[in-house]
Image (cartoon, rainbow, N blue to C red; front, side, top):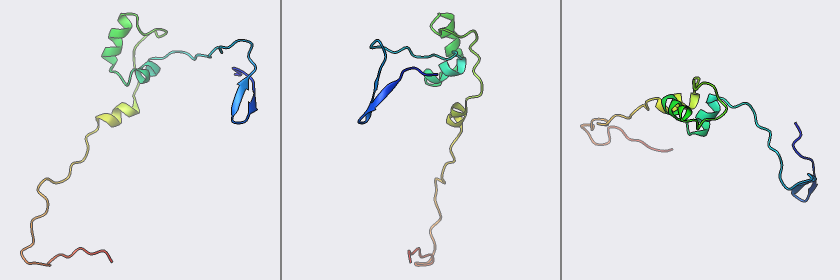
Length: 98
């Protein structure tokens, strides 16, 4: 879809639109799009906003599986807290960079 046409002058594109403002084409609103816009809000929080009429353009607030939310809820692997036991003799284990 062509929104505006223009000529390239230097590093800028100057539009040849009749007015100073351009109309922006909007796609269909979805619950997943609002979930992303609201910073990955929970489905319960979105239901509250929808009941108050603040989420326009959607019929239901069912969010599908969000990959970013799944990664954010995963537990990280922790390192050992105690470390290695010390060796009984000096220079038993020597780490060098050759």
